[in-house]
Image 1 (tube, rainbow, N blue to C red):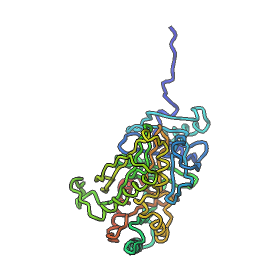
Image 2 (cartoon, rainbow, N blue to C red; image 1 turned 30 degrees about the vertical axis):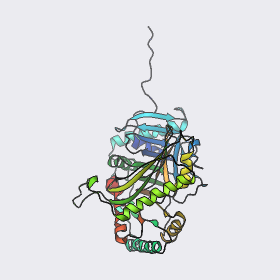
Image 3 (cartoon, helix red, strand yellow; image 1 turned 90 degrees about the vertical axis):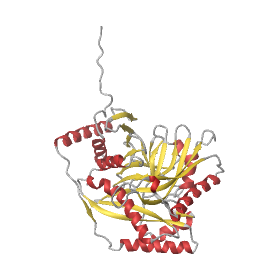
Image 4 (cartoon, helix red, strand yellow; image 1 turned 45 degrees about the horizontal axis):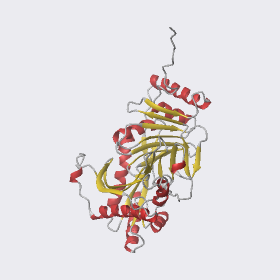
Length: 415
């Protein structure tokens, strides 16, 4: 009887872990994205080997599997960044590869280079302890707090003059980081800390920057079964008491300012549905939800696109929704103009959108909130606050500090 000897190795990637594969793809200059969807245990790593970063229109239902990323300043006919899913690996909670999709084949030269480098990094890190990094304050303007509070005062005055009903103002916080920083390690810490969030890490070598975040806000979701979802998420308060204990959800009380802020976002979504004459949707909420160290109000909207024969709904709604009133304001045009006039910096990819498209047949795009950019030794944290007529400048500053801390408290030890 003949015995057939088979290769027990499932794939060329078997035995490799997230840290080494991420580091290898970064060294080789491959655009890549790591992400974990809310309330799931799987981590996915996408590496774009052949074409670098492409630009394309976000016609989501027509896309090949990949990862989408857009700036805040995006208009419906503009292109977005697209990382082609040449290699998509799925990892379990214990860092084992459970599935792989390698469009290039295991004999592809760049795939072999990637694996060989990852294996050598794995051997090095097994022999040597990784250097610890450090996070240091950056000397900058001392009046950041007073400047932000002044912009809030200007916004409240504009609202009282009926220029708009709400505007979302944001700010940055810079910290220096050293070469010891481990981005994939920081990503995995966020995954464990925030099971309810979309946690992502994106390397954009052409921009010489990485973006790490834990966003609570879904923008558009289109599942392979035809289910479309979006949400309104607004209203913010701390989730812990003075002693650091988590405040139970049923003890949370919302003020008129937060309730109105969330209602404005919900009405904005419904107005978008009305523009395309869509009446068949399921609305659930508002409910109090935990997002890191914060509580928010959330309402979920769901549509059966199969029943409506509307497969392109996600692409249509993306154009209508972004930028939502949760990151821009109401009405959109005057609030966006106010942001451009007074905010004083370029938001870049902060409060844009990002996420996997057509991966496993599903598209999940999130607003890029609770995010930090790593570029040229500076970690820039971004945070915003919804300003209404009842806003108190000092409290809005405190809200942005809480949002920065959502990331900083978890990843600080990764530096």
